[in-house]
Image 1 (cartoon, rainbow, N blue to C red):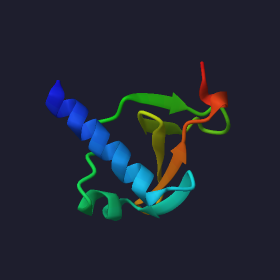
Image 2 (tube, helix red, strand yellow; image 1 turned 30 degrees about the vertical axis):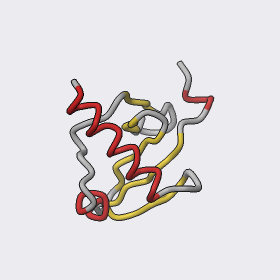
Image 3 (spheres, rainbow, N blue to C red; image 1 turned 120 degrees about the vertical axis):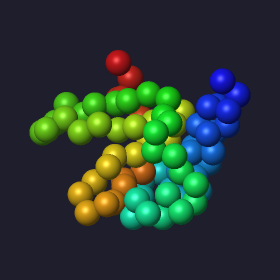
Length: 82
C-alpha cells in the first residue's frame, strides 16, 4: 500500500509541476519521461457533455487523454462533486 501511495503522490506532484495554474495541455511523452505512471490514479470523473470524456485524478489534480498523444491537466472543481 505504501508503494502505491508513493506512486500516486509522485503522479500528483508531476501534474502540479506541469500545471501550476490548473489547466495545461502537453504531450503525453513529457509526463512519461518524468516518471508519470498512467496506471495509477485515485478516482475518475466522467463529463456529461458530448461523448462523456473521462478525467483520471491523482487526488486533486486530474488529466484528460486527448487525441494526438496529448494530455489536458486540470484541477478538481466543485462542480465535479457527485
